[in-house]
Length: 96
Image 1 (spheres, rainbow, N blue to C red):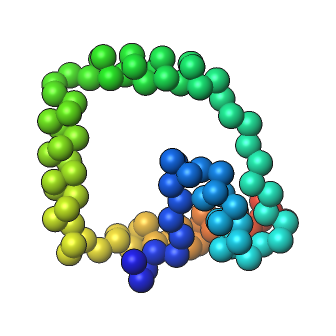
Image 2: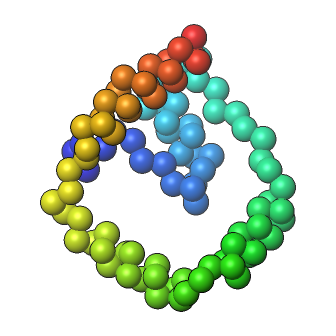
């Protein structure tokens, strides 16, 4: 976890937003959002699950197993450059 600066969880979305604001150290950060229609989202997700070709549960299990073996994975340089030179500065400019 030494390379990860912040982790937010969808299960604790509101708390994660508040912790993100504190972690950023930006007093003007205002974590405001408007929830979408949860029923519509659930219905859409149900349609996507029904349309999935193959065994979704088995594919999820396979993916999770592969992810357990990613200890030697290193982040590509392009990802680091985009994060540090594009996304983070864009966030700071938006907060200004």
